[in-house]
Amino acid sequence: MTHTRPDRSIRSEWPRIAALAGLTVVGVYLCYLLVAPFLPGVTWAVALALVGLPLHRRIARVVKNPNWAAGLSTAIVVLVIAIPVALVAAQLAAETTRAADTVREQTSDGKWREVVARVPYLGEWIAQLEAAEIEARVRELIGQLAARTLGFVQGALGGLVQALVAVFVLFFCFHDRHHLLAGVRSLIPLAPDGSDRIIGRAEDAIHATVYGTLLTSVLQAATGGLMFWALGLPAPVLWGVVMFVLSVLPFVGAFLVWLPAAVYLVTVDRWGAAIALVTWGVLMGGPVCNYLYACVAGDRMRMHPVPTLLAFIGGLAVFGVSGMVLGPCVLVVTVALIDVWRHRASDGIPVAARSEGVPKTASPAPT
Image (tube, rainbow, N blue to C red):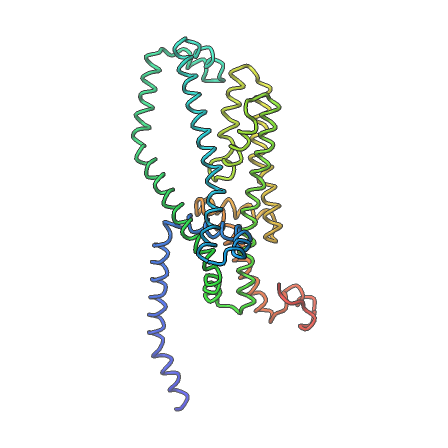
């Protein structure tokens, strides 16, 4: 009879435990719904905080006030990103205005037909259109763009909100990084060494993603500038910088620069130069940069290049912009958790060592 009372008390506790677990799951899900709209801003704030942490440590040695140190570090990171983007945006706006003026001049004197006729496939058909028909098509296009103006404005406002959230979170990642790390460690149901191992793998994934993306963007920008210089295209250095910024941004890419340049080369009957530029753009934007990213990021993440690249691309497909960071992080954290289960299942002995009969005392400590 003495053994039945604890069993009965345990049985009576199960409904409360189940209710508590259910409420916890609901609460976590609701918290996710609250944070999900701001996931890109939060993700990139954490990534930038990890990349900019060495800079912040140097600033904190000089500026003793933690608020001023975090604010100065945040301002430097924001300026490093905002200044090149603003310069590129201004240059693109200037080039667009210049191109519109050129089109207006050629339309007034009738030279546009001669230029457009050189465009492959569609050029001759467009050149045969009458001015009234072209004007009607342009008005129709402008009407469609005006109808989508609300969507563009909403997207711009959404991007501004994400940027503000990122700056806000970035400041507190610098200011309260020790408390945040302690909170993350407390949520991981593992021993301190296991928690540190998982957090370290996640940091490696973030560093690998950021540095791999920057390296491939620099390579694409440098070779793109050299291609523009070799082909005699104007402002190779400027357009190399533009290609760098566009290569860093997901779902954009340097093709927004080299593809119009290739069309221009076709219109001036430089087919060889156009083919060379397109060949470079396709190879560099596809297999070359993807292979380089997979090798560089995979080496830092201590993983094979194939799952590394799949995690990067799959993260973009599932999480959008924030998937550049979340995809590799999910992969390395999952692999680290599987390693924990493997070590626990083998009582601390790696599976390969146990299969070879290595005694427990001779097994290396898990890393």
